[in-house]
Length: 220
Length: 228
Image 1 (spheres, each protein chain N blue to C red):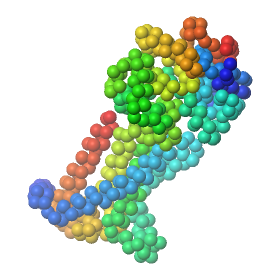
Image 2: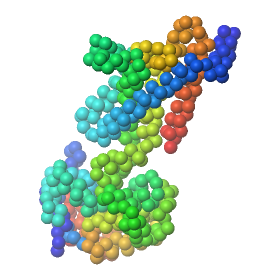
Image 3: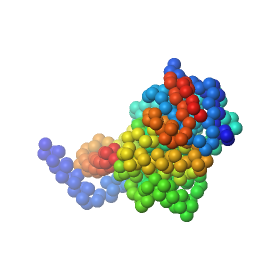
């Protein structure tokens, strides 16, 4: 097992409220994990920490064996290996192409390579021909798929998904579930929050249950 | 009432005849206001962005300072800049007092807090998902900030236009720093003040009509942007 993340004594506090309190958690490369727990259990906060967007209050995180120093350039470098897809994704004003190409441009990728990557990502989520559509005029399901394409275009080492299958139609959910299930075979680590207790078994992945910010159960 | 009606008619005739004095004042007003607005935007937008994106005690102080600066009377700004630009002042050697440049400097100081405050309000009111989305897609802090500005561009435009509105309508700075020199630093507002005191009410009214028209256009544009 190749280690992707190792979390040691991680806490995240907002005032007196402890959102996350994890003694130890190790996540492997190329594996899918379903993160479950009641609302307020700390799932989204944990995803923010794993995405290197939310610094923990205390504790240490190792990514691929490297200790993350939140004040150094390591965070930005590692952040480029990880993509977080929010539950209600924000699409930038403009075309679908602009959205899907955003992360590629941020990495200095341009021209034909961008076109190919965007088209491939849109095809993966069943949105061929959507490149020039206005992103703000898409349906909820289409917007979710564009956000997924935007993440997939970057071919991240880790994809963090915050309830990606909530609030979308059945057909889109099936499509996205298939796409998500295929990612570990490409070496991508997936951590997905969900309220569906069947997801871990159906997606053939590990399961982490959070209660009050703590890991109540882990089947890694 | 006849006085007002006849003055209004004379004012319209002055505008229609393209009186050189009216045109000079309008041109000077628009030029110095545009210049001051550009500089205020260059300073105010980054400041509003920085304060809006920072969550610290310092940003709270900055918000208070910006609100205070917005309320500073124009004559106080005029007085302060006059002190710097007058012959005995530290920048007196530059010979800028009673030039359009001096009005631009004063106008910049007047408009900057407005531009910064309106930009700050736009940043604080922006969708909270914009920055995390940009960052998680690999943007660095500057690209993420630029993306945020792009997403709230109508609010930023509105901030800049509000700054222009403040400068074009003020009289204190233009009078104290420009000196109301005919054909050189005489703006619409200083000309209105002077001509009315001389009894040239119709001339003042002509400029008042132009100024109101400019203010109307600016506000129409502003409300159009705020609806976006």
